[in-house]
Amino acid sequence: MSAETRATDDDLTASRDGPMRALVLHPDIRSDRARRAPEFALEEAVALAAALPGLEVVGADVVRLPRALPGLLFGKGKIAEIKARVASEDVGLVLIDGPVTPVQQRNLEKEWGCKLLDRTGLILEIFADRAATREGVLQVELAALSYQRTRLVRAWTHLERQRGGLGFVGGPGETQIEADRRAIDEAVTRIKRQLQKVVKTRALHREARKKIPYPIVALVGYTNAGKSTLFNRLTGAEVMAKDMLFATLDPTMRAVALPDGTDVILSDTVGFISDLPTQLVAAFRATLEEVLDADLILHVRDISHPQSAEQAADVATILSGLGVADTAPKLEVWNKLDRLDPDASAARQVEADRRPGVFAISALTGDGLAPMLASIAETLSPPRHTKTVNLPHADGRKRAWLYDQGVVEAEDQGADGSRLTLHWTARQEKAFRDL
Picture 1 (spheres, helix red, strand yellow):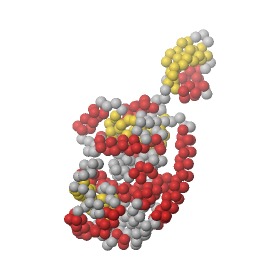
Picture 2 (cartoon, one colour):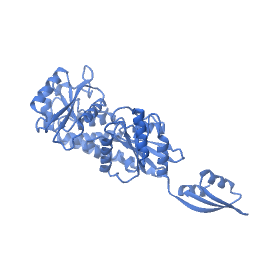
Picture 3 (cartoon, one colour):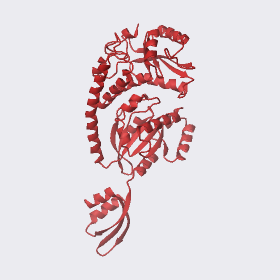
Picture 4 (cartoon, helix red, strand yellow):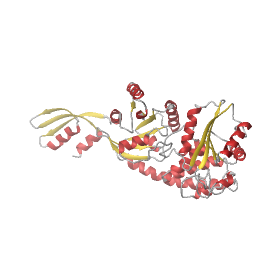
């Protein structure tokens, strides 16, 4: 069955007989300077495929190549081998974990008789399926238009749909390839106009938040590092937290009271990933505004993952690209201790204790949270100043309030009242004046 006749009218990934069967391939190109460890890259690619509903991964392989061939990516022998496998295993979709040019995609789809998605297309599909807010949906559509404008391999009727999904895997308009740049440009103009309205609304919300003297703590990290689990643990919220890539796409914010009484706003954000499509980095800049405005960034790492260091480097690169590399203090959170054996967990805890600003925890069990929360409170503590205040004996209520706040450093009793030496914040001083 050809790519043009395989899809149904409204289901993105499932065929009439059930889930679409997918084959995942990671091209390990020796000439690629940005080459990643192939086994871990393939594992991540399979996890990406599993994150898209309606797909059944029936096979996954690393394909080693000296270089990428311009027209077909793979050599003729490998193409024939994959073609036979596609036919024998009734594969409807081949996922290539890497960039595929429009010419390569067209030629490979013709050779194999099935649909093909590269890494960028797959991530866009997942984002489209998960985006929940109006802005998230619009940002995904804008990123998809930027990606597809260079390809022009589908009709654009899917942009009018109400439900998630972008139509890369299936949908209307597959009977012929349409190259209608005007339709795409009109859609881009319409979406940008809608986004302007949404961004204005978010700006108003942001201004309103600034009037509340609560610092913002943003959770960032590689996808599936456990940010949403930590967010739920600290806030009591029920944000989607699954062992799945890109479980959270839209930012969620909640107020949290730290153990010392400090109130903060905690923000859960989209997970980062290596080789994140450049269209999405640009399109989701607005979605990551909470990170840009954050008073403190918590970089959450899955310390149980074999590629944890490489993932941390990818996050640092993306943060730098967003312009937030040095704008806010950062704490590093080594999460998922519960996934390590006791000896490895203890070793990680000892290592974290030796590093300033690093905390080993399990968001799932709550282990290690107390030192982390204490450090957050200390980092966010507003500046304090010392002042001497004279209180008559009749102002017993104000004196009790000062002691309750823990700001009294010394007190000298006199005939007319008390002379108190106070060490307090500007907000506490204002609250005292308003008593």
